[in-house]
Image (tube, rainbow, N blue to C red; front, side):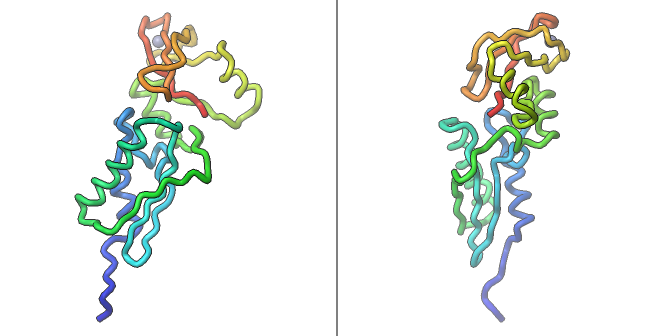
Length: 170
Ligand SMILES: [Zn+2]
């Protein structure tokens, strides 16, 4: 009998990772956000590759801890969580479903960053219009480039008189 039982396959690891939510957006998993990039299993060692989102986002440490916790709780001792900086995370890696969930959570989702330059420029200018996630009104106003975290901007909807956050595009 070969003494190399592979206890977990990749799919099972992906399943475990899907339980890890962004601490700032508890409705979204790190899979939906596109943070978890790759799972490899080498000699029973599980290697999880993650690409940090906004640099310096304090949530990344929490996410890393959470990944380690989930793996440990499920009896995986031999693992490594690697941060991959070779690619830059962009909001385009978010799935459409994730953007929909974000909206339902009351955060205006990011648009596409690569559709065309005019659109990108309009997002970068201070006059960008972000529709309200509650009523879809475009009668909204930027109140602060930084909401509860650096990843979000604070907006106000003049139609439903509610403040909301917008997950910024990068
Ligand atoms: Zn509104």
